[in-house]
Length: 376
Image 1: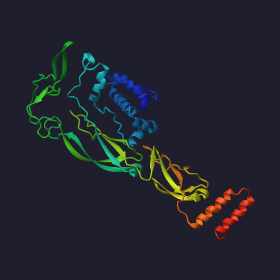
Image 2: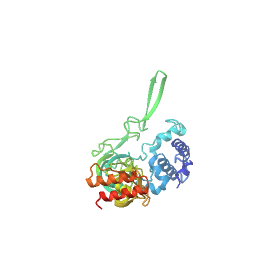
Image 3: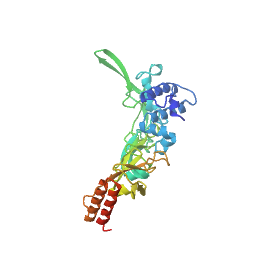
Image 4: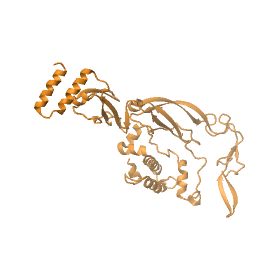
């Protein structure tokens, strides 16, 4: 599927354009409005497109590699609304003006499945682990549905009665006076949370919450080429949902340690290679450390200080691709020796005289001097 076509926007659309397009199409596709058999599925696709294109990292991956790139980078494709629609009540209600909605009133069904909260975890990984990819075990703490009460919060032997606070309506009405006059507000019942029911006893294991905190060890696959700020989404590893709703997701945010050997610039790697003046003049072969290991490269004669040599395809692996990579650039740094031997000093002086010679005859004479200085 093409996310831009789903939202009917251009590929260079701004976030404001995307948000505007999403709101317009959501009005038409929301299952509470559109009774077509495929309305729910089309609304989910709309949600996936909106979530992806509103996230800079995901959008860049999608533009380059499509949905496969998102999956390979560890992003789930469920979209922000998953299989329930209670998560967008705040957005959808705004279409019709705050609490207004169909027939002048729009309220979330308190007994409808509600998706659990998303969680975030920040972890630090080594530079080379980010280059090569790694599988790690993480210990997380999240809320799981209480097995004792199956998430209801009620004691299994409890008797449900009509909520005395709201009379079973799930909402309470309040009259508020202000300098502008009196007005009436309707809010969700704080006692039964909108269900209209009240048990005579609550679950002792979860204290009526419906969920319990648990530690869990999970495995996470970190792909090659991640960088600081990269996010990996683990579906259904967030907090438990309510009323049978799906759990939220866990977002793992990566922080990559800096390397002592390599400098990263996007998909490219930079290193510095120190050479002597003799190597710079005559050329040489040198061993260069790359993220793949040691590589031998040629130094051309006459190379200048701060010149760059290219090791093509030796840079950072592209996220979502098993073949494409950046480059490795080697910056040459010519080091002048601080201490030299007497023999080296004679040679440098002879070379200096050669450079000062004006004609070939003079140079020939100087060459003889160099030979003499070297004892040849």
